[in-house]
Length: 362
Picture 1 (cartoon, one colour):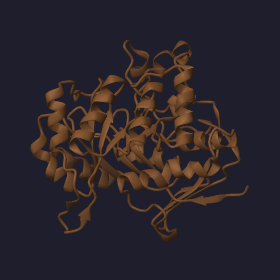
Picture 2 (cartoon, one colour):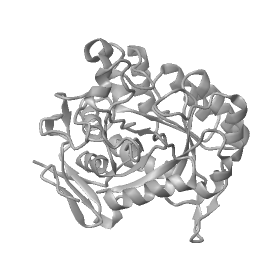
Picture 3 (cartoon, rainbow, N blue to C red):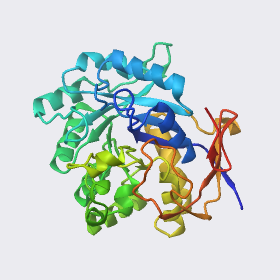
Picture 4 (cartoon, helix red, strand yellow):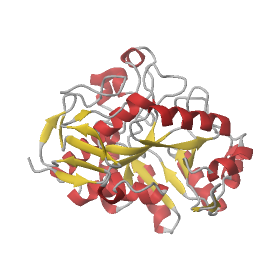
């Protein structure tokens, strides 16, 4: 086995469910799932049952994660359009990496579909470098948008109007790829991410997998899928993000099923599979899972002068789920699939947390 060393991978889009829904994930189990998949830094989303839209709720998450997580966790602040007075303090917090804005319905009660409130958010979020409490200067942090179709066009226009950096989360439709491509061609500060489930699954999966293939945004057509791969290869899409959204099997089998699928343990394996199959270049795996997310979100270095790293053989094939799952939900939409590059070792700041493919860090 020819193991290769990589910096720890970064996932800027996860839902770790704590506080409020720890029956399906928490900071401990979610971080164990992360390191098993080679992720050493991830950023948690704000749509908890009690959303992260105040400094108090943010501090609660920071403290909970500090005592339980195996790897490093940052946070995106949330908004319902009525908490703009919280923005300055949240943006200055070094644990915060962006503002998450929901323009389409998803899990949680944070939908903003009123154009007046949307404009208020884009106007209020700090768009210039920030002085942190320790006196250091922090680059302006992006607004991350869950925006599909027409809503994405509106978000791009408001970003231009108010000079905001925009990151389009979990892009899923061909029209959305084209909107981002045209915005980039005009020089707008916009980036986009795509999820492995949208790259590898289409709407036909709903017939086979029922609720286990239910997610937001929904799975698209074959044409949408082809546009996503093309967007990765021509630079329109910048990163791969999991939108790790664990739910119990009971929640996925009921009617209506909960939205979302887990992804932390499978992202790297699926992207190394894509490289082996010629869907992307081998060197682009690191670009999508580390270099670009680190640059876009100003994430701390995950190479740490050799003290933080992941070891795997990108050519070795393995079966997803063959040794179980670390996520509390205990399943994957890719269960039984063949992937490449099983993570063998993960070291964070000199401490080994994965050895021989098994999580050993506490």
